[in-house]
Length: 173
Image (tube, rainbow, N blue to C red):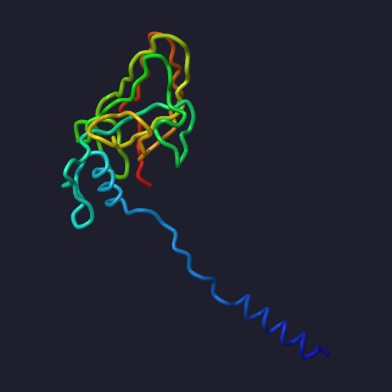
């Protein structure tokens, strides 16, 4: 014979087992919004009722950097940045002349060719894209908008100009 305490515990356990689980909202951006967001960030095309590009001095270029290792989600363009002799970040137009946006992905409109190394050897494994803090100057610890790994890695030696091709993909997930 079951005791009252055992029966109550069994009823409670059954009630908890049958209770609905709390709903979890998991998802991402819609494709059209992801496309609009890429166009806003990379081509300076506004999103009606959400974002515009009418700031006093909106960025007209984006800064592209190379990195020897992942700069990290909280890193800047200075984090693990390439340091081979001759290296400099690239300034890429923030327009359709600089970037091609299709769906939730974007690519450089042209190959992005960095300065040739004057000496030494270095391997570039990551790239990043940032907005210049002032005008079109691509120097300093700029906040990274997008970053990605480079596969295969770029081995840079004296006389070699590393290049990100038009096949480089930036995703808005």
